[in-house]
Image (cartoon, rainbow, N blue to C red):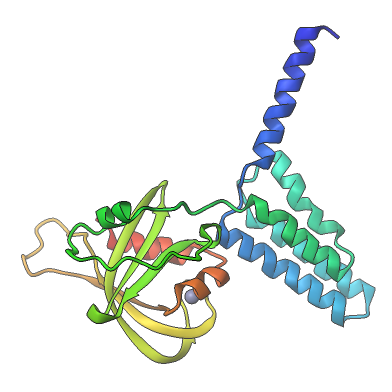
Length: 236
Ligand SMILES: [Zn+2]
């Protein structure tokens, strides 16, 4: 084999490796993977019938591969490791081995956050100390003094921010974002969309119950469709 061809193959191989080492799993996808793997681990630990475990393993492998629909070939191979999980330790190791591939939400500066809410004069900024931005699907925080809640999310490749009023429910209910039974609040925001010919006092607001604690929510969210639909209703 000629040197040039060898060098070319080496480059292709390196490119594949680079792509493979790049983070490609979004937080909600990682949550989905961990949930599926957790179900398998639970079955391994509690069920004695190997047929049942095999069936759960198959379901887990499907759920893991479907969690990242746009994965490249090399990335799909990484995810396919779910089909070989035999012990509870394997399950833990597998979940841990994917952690380096979780894509960062991005560390937004205070200035970037202020720009997302130009109408808020004294924006209360979120406490991001100790926040691991890999495990963030959306950034959410409240300003108790003004009863307002702020959400920041990367929609179609750009950060968008929405703000609205927040009313704690003072009881647990289903969060529309993570679908879990948690301490929730009613978040209500006015849409920036205006139909043509709308009267000056026209407005439309959208409300939903969501986790009061956005860190808890970000640890549980496995699907972003409800969040994206909600944001699309609000942004102009
Ligand atoms: Zn939630």
